Length: 416
Image (cartoon, rainbow, N blue to C red; front, side):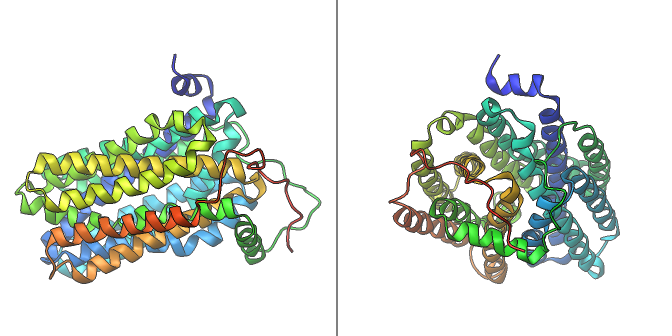
């Protein structure tokens, strides 16, 4: 039996955490793909879809410093369950989006869902090493890294098909049921999701906790390099706004939009699984991150010059194979560098920078999407990622994760 299957079969707490994430990610795409198709149909403009994507990531980015601090202080299981319930309520609001006059309600609903995700994500990311044995970390990260890609394939493709067959509102109801299931799975996790804390120490104030984490990152070049690496793919993420429009150019409609998002997810699924060997050799981590960023950018530059839809799908797969690899390698490397007491805040900072980059990219694309050709947008996003990858590699060329010092520091005394 492969290591990935072994850890899933033998470790029930990891299995429940993984399944909960699968359901959450699937619900996210059962909402997003139908909504991105619905809004242009209701309003006649691609701007609303771009604003939805920008809100989805921007709100998360703004909330993460606070929610990451809470993930280090409060019960991570309870945070995850409460976030699922809040997201469910947000999705229910989408049932009221019925015409141009109610398109604004989609903004409110996605904001609620984004706030819920801002609480859920750092808690789930920080909890992962606590449900795995040391020998299971590489296999567990490969499996967990595939969760988003797996459910992007399932959620995006089925979301596109169901939306075309039965309408978007059926998809919204499916997401409501899925989020209820995710809360139940989180409740079944038996292992503690954080290391024991000193019960006699007074609780750390939230913003002092945020400053402590930022100081920790700033004084450790390896950690600083790792929390800035996802921004390369983030700055190229404005391409997602173009997916529904690109499907329209090729005449493939909602099903084509679902296929584009599904192939994106397939790449993000396969990348983490095949990168498991890279995780076992720390000397390969930084070069692997630079290569993955570059390949993402090259993929979208290629898409901008092709005129055949099957080749477009293949290049989307390649780009997000690289993007998924980038995500799992950087997460694994950070887990090896950061102590549990700071992990929620450091991962929140990591995700904040990535999602801010995504929001900037999507807002820029939103400002030009109705006046600039889709292919120019795709090429621009790809080139931005390539330039960032080059700059990041130059800045980190003197660093290595292979030396023995690249281990979590002992928990320092917290700043009050």
